[in-house]
Image (tube, rainbow, N blue to C red; front, side):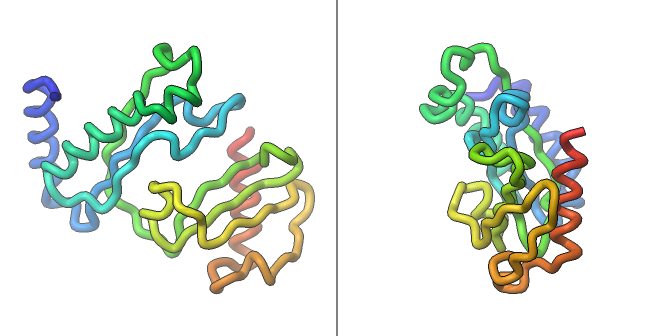
Length: 171
């Protein structure tokens, strides 16, 4: 159970923002360990989306915090599991045409950028198979329109933006 003082602070904060969350809230983790130069472990911790009530927000925070100690998280963190802390972010929901994960370097080929996209935010946070998965060459924009433009999710302009974002994030 959460300390009463923390619960009071969470409830107070929710009441302050309640009128401003017509699109709901998302609760997610933030950890240096999650994504860094040595690890790419997005999705290890629990995230929750489309939250509209105080009780659901508190439940989501508890679930996200508990996921820091899940069997999967402890396995991936190995011997460092006790040393790695985790923060929790509560933010307004952002709705988009698609949601995704971007790996600026694919583990099997560092010359490739891996992009995974889904039509729903819930698929991404629950680790479901993406609607669209493709690779971009770090040095060239490959024209694989038959794969990339599945269901008209992307066009070449957006593909260029995704690639440039991946390369920019590394600097």
